[in-house]
Length: 443
Image (cartoon, rainbow, N blue to C red):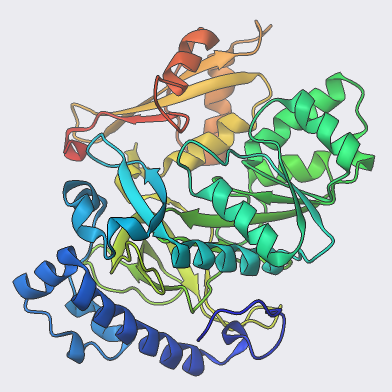
């Protein structure tokens, strides 16, 4: 299927076709991807030989289980071997975090950048954008990130307008909103609370502003039942705008965006194949949670086959109310390696984040997990407060954890500046809010 600039909002789009048509379509694209890897990828050619994988016998999506997984440590150890084109075809260099300390480099060709633009164009259309909309981008477009570049290319491809403000600085964000009147903003959802707090402190009438839609990145807004989570509810209670969540990663070069019905992120079948894998490394039934494993389609520079994302979610295959039959991913439950067993209860760090992010007097925090003498997980949350409180903050936080999670981690109140130094270490591109010191997670 050739990528075109025509509007996707029509029944000819593969996302609106029947599940049987989508499956057949993806199997044809998989065959093309396997042939490309066999011809051009040093890493996968070696892997096919080592495991005696005959790509001609991989004819159905179910046959993918015959192929070993690709893990992030493989990308780090053999980074250059994943490159399928000569270096002079590389247009853009991107990096993402690695499991062994150093970042992983991704190389994008001109075709890959066009694919990124197409992907984000479809995702923005899924969220209801069209030519004439104005989007204020509150994320960086530099520092070797893929996301900001992809959003810019997608809005440009769509024919809408974009304001590249970058992240942070509420004063600049509100000044831009006042001057240019965007109808959509795109940012990490927790930053919206900072925008609201700044607006309320400075008498800005944010509820009557031009902004009618918020597209969230990097953080979830809904639970597994597609209801707004604590963060989503707090935003919605303050600011009655449309909320859309997205899920994406550098490795897959694709975005799962919610439509107006907010029932999971829609896959673009021409760009990616998704498997949901259980603890036995085999696919789980649709609707059951497991690890998201992706195979990229149409990538020229560094395509990936059965890449383990480490993210935990479920796949929903029933037709969406918007008319699309393409399967959807539920909001992420968490990261596989970050699963915590606390006092007999299984939970993931985002559940702890959710409680802390929605506590008014919490300035910042960091979560530590260690092995306990009993062989379970010991969880300590160090919290910085916005100001001194007239009540016992430790007890209040434990009560909130108990009410929302049924279990309580240890809580310690520390200086907010000390926590900030942990959250933003030198050279780190992402805030550090979770530190796993368990031996089973040491590389």
